[in-house]
Every structure is written in structure tokens, then in C-alpha cells.
Image (tube, rainbow, N blue to C red):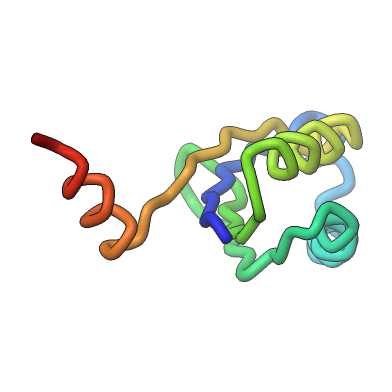
Length: 97
């Protein structure tokens, strides 16, 4: 499984319905399961992004499909980052000549 970090910012719709944000997070967690993805942790944050979520997904295609489904709901705009563990990064570095 690959790790993905999703940075989310509330849209106008999302902030108007802010009292539902934790319920929406549970809905995303359940939606993720339908794509074979695990939502590991949700964090509500201060700064440039409003929510940070850690996901584990089997592949980029599944994560992309989930990201599109989340975006289609209209509550957040997202930026998805593929994250590498120390071990994974060492495997990448081992490929360098």
C-alpha cells in the first residue's frame, strides 16, 4: 500500500456547512473503503490548509478516483501528495547509479 497526504481547503459550501465537517470526514472514511483505501488519520489545521488527511491506497488510480469523488461533493478543494517512508525512499535511492 502507498501513502498519500491530502491537503484540503474548504470551499464556500464547505465553510457554510462547517458544523458538519467531522461527519463529512466519517463519510469520506467510508467512501475510501469502496476504493480499497484506508483513511488513517484526519487533522483539522490552522494555516494555508484546513484539513490534512493521511490515506493508504493500493495505487494511484484508486487514490485519484477517491480524490475526484471527494472534489465532486463540493466541500473542499484538494492537493494530493504521494508520500514515501524511509524504507521506500531508500529503495528509490538504491536505484541510483
